[in-house]
Image 1 (cartoon, rainbow, N blue to C red):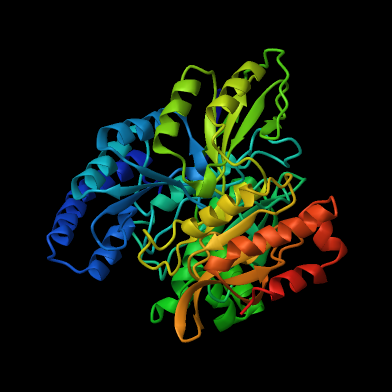
Image 2: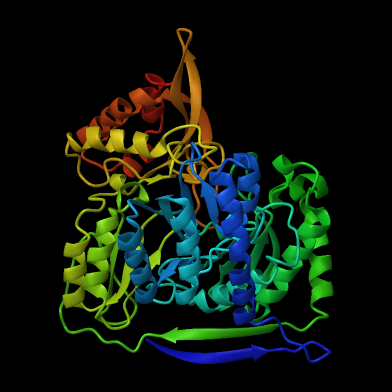
Length: 531
């Protein structure tokens, strides 16, 4: 892959420029000693789990449920996993015996079941390949999200990755200089598919056909979800840093520092009103435009050509580059077999310009493959989802997450095992989203069918259950949060999906067509299970 450098350098009045990324990395390296000491104290029982969580999150690490192991979140701006970074992951898996890996809905990789020693050592070694875990959790700017096929997708408005990566570097500067009320999530979309939910993020840049961005702000999922407020339209890509700075300043000025439950950006819509929020944002934007910001972007150009081999499969996506393909790999629940990643690396390591893009739905795309290479990658990833339903999304769940209420991974596994026995055709059941709690890490609120962890008392016995959400959507211009229809016991969810699949199959159609034709049939079937 050839890269041409485009420098957008606007120095401020004093001739100063932004702190270089290398300087930041050095500062983050120096912080590791503090992390090691705090982690030692936690495992020695000298600090509480709550105290450790408030500290470790800023380093991209949390103690898992039970406090006997740690997880580490590897930030991957735009979900880009180069071959060098993939090699780092597989080497770490081998060296430290990592047995659980998770592709997250924020386009990162989480390593699980780590010891006190391994979590600190892996964090330090990640710097060598440009992986920075700092700010991966806690009240910091999180991983910048990007439409996963940006730059190679047929029909995209334009490649948004260069601007997203510049924003990612810029946001790192705030980690040690300001105190945010809560975390800040930024997303870029390259088309109306809106895979990154850019229209309802804390800050979202939505590509337009004219080569500019519409900008949305103060949106988000979870408790009291909100669509974003459109704060600007037809923004030149060269101005994105001004909008990031305006978002930061607005959050600092109007965010809630007193009540964490209402400290996310979306609550500023409540305190200021939508018009009041827009005015506050634009006021900050006007102020920051008096400054001069530096942005360096790298515009990728795929020079690779196809080899004349044609390939077709449900997991093949033709790229806009003639003769090149992307292979879709969705490990069930976003949890690949750790050894499978080693096999994948061995398959692609000598392939020109190939990289992996992680998507917000826990899918991995292996891009820039010629036809012959695509066939090899298809074979190497044959253990993944076999149909749309199996590509369903689930957060890591309460077996690992401290705040998780239900085992979303376990629930999805139980459902898939039962549904597989029916051998339904692809599309008979839709992709579903299962979150273990109200945090909506699996985006249950925008799923066609979504589930959120809960409890239900049945005959004086408290049982694991999930709140059932219906009719969510994330496509730009059609966004809506699903409505809650009630609770379904976890143990009855497999039976519900089997019955639903049989009803759709009987009419020789897909779920989408079936539901559109007669939506009351879904309510009728669900009614047998709702409590």
